[in-house]
Image (tube, rainbow, N blue to C red; front, side):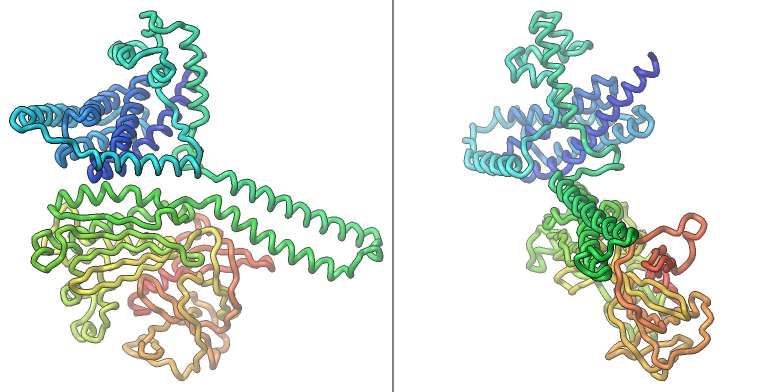
Length: 638
């Protein structure tokens, strides 16, 4: 019996975590939006309802600390709803701190089922700021004449919100977030708001108190509780702590149709094989070869469609990551006394869940650098004839089988000379060599571990770890990063990432009789040369390609393959990783092919230059080159 109760309680807590996680995910962005549009009463009510739900459910489960912080935060939001106080940046700082504390408690509950977080300081701040704002508002009311309201702004916000809500209904259907018991009772006119507030002050459950006070009947309570339970069941999220994702039912329907087509082709194949085995080949409408070719073509088409359908089921809007940044930008801009506007576009662009998981850290570091190093202070911008408020543009778009993510600012741009000087100081390049490098090559030094041009270290940046993290994470998912900068106008960082990590387009090559796959995402071009075109500069083989000196790497030497005969006219595959170009010398090009990546396992996972393997149509295993690893061979390659 005890075990059954424990299991039931664990299920309730999991439901609570699922519901609260989504509320907290939305709160940060909603609060930042509210600060920009304080007249949006619908948004304010939505935020209030979210905090109210967290307070109610955490209180029911006995999580006292979360309940207390949520309650104090709710008090402030309630005063804002009633227009008894005005929203200020300082007030928003404390509200956000309250939400951060709730999030910290939430994380502790998820990990340990305990509230291992100190809350007293946050609670004191919430109480203090509410009291100060109330007193301030009272003084203003006493000392100043009443100012007429500005109904136009409120009406405009309401109309906009109503329109957005209607479009949601058209696209996604009604909101199915489960309502609190008190809300349902008030809606059904079984109790008043006053009755609910009275009941909330007691230590017992709201329903029990209302029955005891003869506000509602026991039968009515049971019906409402059953309705609430059904709502909660309907609203259970389709993911449990990141292990599952939501899938549009239309995509499932499409998948089912494709499975039906696959079954049909399977039956055709079984039928033709049966006729051949039983000597009935003469009754076939066409020859055996023609029948087999027809089935093969159809299977190839259906398999491609099936593959695409499955990939789409793994796709998640990149907005899941983008939605975190309004809060980050808001906090950093206040900390650094800068005025920053974040403009987001393309948040509906979809990308594989595995890629989404690797996006957060690189984008955080890039945006922090944009605010700290890229954008000038408001005073500097005014002197330069720029608007006081700097802009950061965060966008996503799809190009073929890639997603392009851009972070662009309208700041001062990168100081090429400062980067060159720091690179020389750190011994990354000699002064003589530095003078021969292009601006692009000099900019690439910012991705070196520990590299920073900051004059002082702050808690935002300057330690030289940010861009190295960006490079490492982008390399991990076979992506590339490009930097465009114009002095006085700004900097743009462009991430080009594969839509999925499971299936990729590859270029197959042969070296010393062995077959390798190179991810097509990093291939710039392929050329065939005469071996006499290969020159040596400072013990490094290079090739003059148009106006560029391209470092070369013999793949056979890197993998210690015995090359019995050197080709007179080898092929060079030009690849690019984190803006470093490299020419791979191979014997033959075998063509392009879509491959399924298979991990090598723990025993082989640290082999340099190999990122995985794939099984080809002939059953043979082909290794996949890790181009980032090859391009990182500084002494041998660059």
